[in-house]
Length: 240
Image (cartoon, rainbow, N blue to C red; front, side):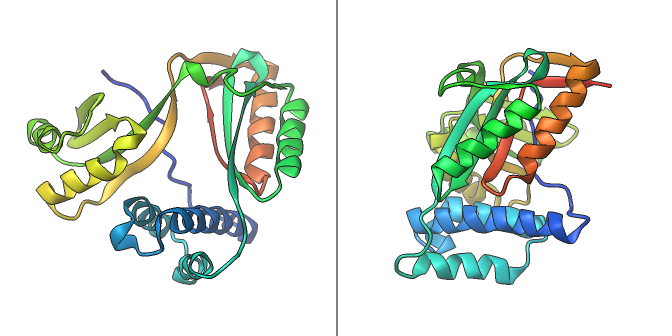
């Protein structure tokens, strides 16, 4: 079906400041995964996947271990997920996922980014109905039928599967994450995933150009600089 997807994999940080932000974001996600599902990666598939992605993005072991140690201890920080939706310049749709210990601070920061980027923050549900919340698993393999059989045998609900240039991409509901990974790794052993994420995929795209493109780039850059922001999804096709 040729569906494009936004790969969450972060680009290699080129400055100390960028690295600090990348490490902080992974640290928060690892902490929350461990706090909610247990700090042992062997028994927490979501945590194991998060740690694997962190290592691929060259997050140091001490950052990972610190987050796990904090999750094992009593008390600690109380991060909560928050999701904000709205419209960016040119009418494009934007979803912002956050982990925060101060909701008032976070919504204020996100609203500022929208306002300064000529966007408009909406209420929950404003645009999310125009995105598919989807599990994406992509890995090198050349036998689509074998992959599909392994998933179906484990009763995994697959919504789509692609085979392009020796890479299989599996799309499934987010609730199938643990079951899908277990089925694939049981059938094919350890897998080096090119993509291992739950993302919002836009159902339609919006072309953004001219001054709107400049404002959108500014807004996305400001959101990326916010400590509480974990992921940003949009349906913009930016044209210079």
